[in-house]
Structure formats: C-alpha cells, structure tokens
Image (tube, rainbow, N blue to C red):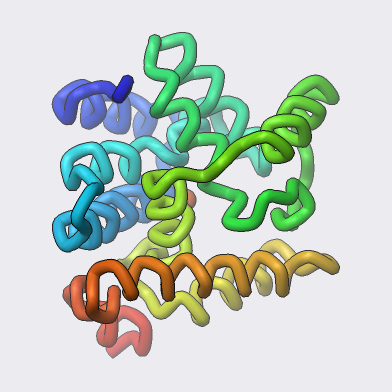
Length: 201
Ligand SMILES: [Fe+2]
C-alpha cells in the first residue's frame, strides 16, 4: 500500500491547514477517526491505513478554496509525492456510485480532468478502502460524527441536488449496510458522541 506514514500525513495536513484553514481540517480528522474505528472491527481493513486515508482524502483543499477541483488537486498532489494509493482515495471518495454526475457542484477543473474521471469511473472497481472513506465522508461534519441522513441533507442544502442525488444517497446507504453486515453491528455504535453531535445538545 503506497501511503505516507502517520507522521508525514500529520505534517501534510498541518501544512495544508496553514495554506487553506477551514472546517475541512476538522472534518478530515473526524473522517479519519470514523474510518479507523470501523476498520478496527473489520476482518481485512487496516485501521492505521484507514486513519491515514481519512486524514488525506480532502488534501486537495490545501491549494485554496475550490469545488470539485479539490478531488483532482488531491489526486495530482499525492501522485507527485509518490503515493498512488493515497491519490486514489482523493479521487474515489466523492463517488459512492460509479457515475461522475453524482456530485453536485462546479467542475472547476480542466476538461482533461473531467475526461479522466469519466474514464476512471467507468473502469474502476472500488475496494473496501474506497468504500470506507466514501462512507465516512458522509458520517462526519466539522463538529463530530453525524447521522448519515443529516450529513447528506446538509450537503444537498449547501450544494444543491441533481437527477443523480438519489442514486448517490442509495449507494451510500448500501455501503453502510454492507459494512454493518461484515462487522455485525451498527456503525454508529463505534462513533462516540454521534447522538450529541447530530442533535446538537
Ligand atoms: Fe470529505
């Protein structure tokens, strides 16, 4: 697995926070914790790698405020650093369904990038690490762990919806069900404070 170690990952995130501070840093940290906790209960996932993937999945935001471009900025950054598995997570985390239309937002990137993701999604077979970060990205906000339904609605309210939003939501819930079938418990039982953060008390 080509990922930076935890020390380097933390240094990358700290540098990124200086370059573009924002709520995305806390979101990345909660995503990492959720991924690690679920991976600890999974027979094949590596909790340390899952934690690093969570910390890195939005690293493309280091280059400034962007919309969908952060996916590609993260992918190219991690590739250039020599970590193709980290790069992969930057790319796959936004697509719980294999269709580039499931993300609502601005394609503020190059036409080559758009073509690349289109071709990539046609061929890729998501692995459990991809699915874990897709799930955990929808399980956290900037203040903690959060009910998926609330996270998805929050995103829809902020970014809008399109004709594939339901496909994305269904795919996200399918990933939840698949992980829960493997770990034999609710993912929420692994997320300390999810009730308090979801209902804000
Ligand atoms: Fe994220």
